[in-house]
Image (cartoon, rainbow, N blue to C red; front, side, top):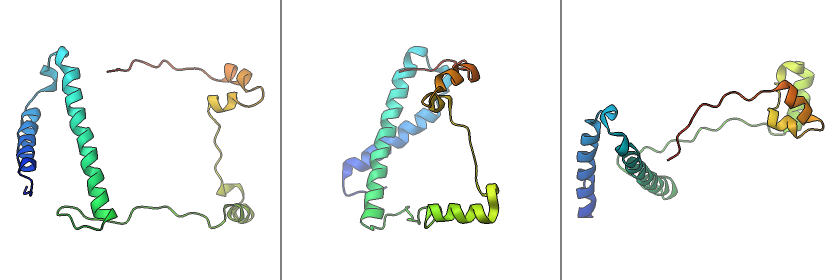
Length: 135
């Protein structure tokens, strides 16, 4: 990596050394007291990665700058109906119900309907959530 800013080159070399050291660690061997501090340090690196990605986006897409190692490709977009209502009417006429999908709303959405709370209290259940970590 070359840069017009000497510190960037030094930090890049440091990061490569740290990455090699991290890859050599067996995560199962990390003491419990060190797990959260290690995770937070790695998350901070990830946050900086997001800042660098934002710069790549701004420069390569926003300014059209050619950046070594970056290829700008068209984004993926899905087709849309010119006129949703007209497409629905024509699809119904030509294909009937086969052109449509129908899904039951969630218990939370049905609760908002008139008498929905009663229906949900009988027709739904709350599965056991298990546990999650907060740090």
